[in-house]
Image (cartoon, rainbow, N blue to C red; front, side, top):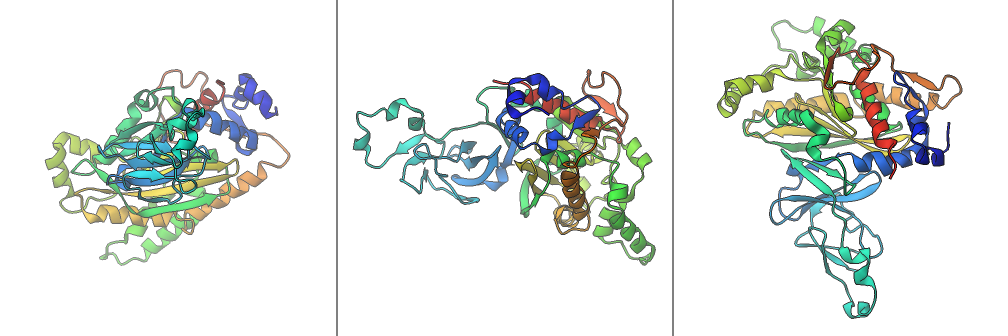
Length: 439
């Protein structure tokens, strides 16, 4: 395939990597293409940074990365949240090296003690007299820390690195309803991060992981050892004894192809989608005592029923966020290299809801998403071997043909079967749109 210089300057070369019903292996392997993703795709899209509950007090912060750029999410004195570039305007040192904490009333670079307000604006420099008569005030260094476009939606904080581009609401559109559904599972209409964050670095391209999130065909084969073991255990379980939560969560992984066909899915513009619009492996979870009454009191009969009846298997807010409404789980995909991906698993506790809901989420996350779990190791093995095998000789194209239709996606949103690979094709159409436009 073409060299990066041709990708960078020739949009058609990028478009040629996705051929409507198949994708070229270079999208997973090419490190130079990954560099271009960092420059274009992740800069132009709205990326999940963190949750407001992680920074409850003035000066509280977390640090992370967007497209290799270190950033700070920090609570302001007026209660708002800002996302700043974590890079001193003087020498480029990270202003904050800790993953979380409280900065107090200002930010101070550990190298030369330049200081900044918590909104990133410059506060002071040592030896100020030494800058008199210089061009410091005419250059970018005098502006302080870079501040990103930022949106706090129901506690979910997103940022766009590009100073100009599509608005937050235009980018996500009706997919914001999935964040509403998640937050409104709390009688108080609010969730908080609880139980810590599981982090795994997986030796694969980030798109492999994101495609897997909406791949309904793989569980019955990839995770056969997990669901078959659960099925065998249930056969010998005492009939008058309730099954443990772990079995309740593992058994549905064995749902057949017909189940997912009927479960339904929906694709939206900009790569977003929902798997399990009519049913999912989470649909059968029971409600803890008193929970439904609390929901009806808080939201009204109609809205409470609407919230609780909708429990999709996975919803993807392209390119980096996957969520489950029940259990209340976020998966945040943070690409590190063409062949390395950091995945963060957030457990969310619905405020004023029974503790059993959080316990269900924590159990599910450990059981399914921990790198040592009996489920995640199946996926990690597949991702690792895919990354290795795609680099070998042979057919350079990856099939995405299942249930393909000519001109599909021309009218979005679009409802399809849960087995339709349009959920993945739709991601690559968004990928091309963000990658093929150069500055």
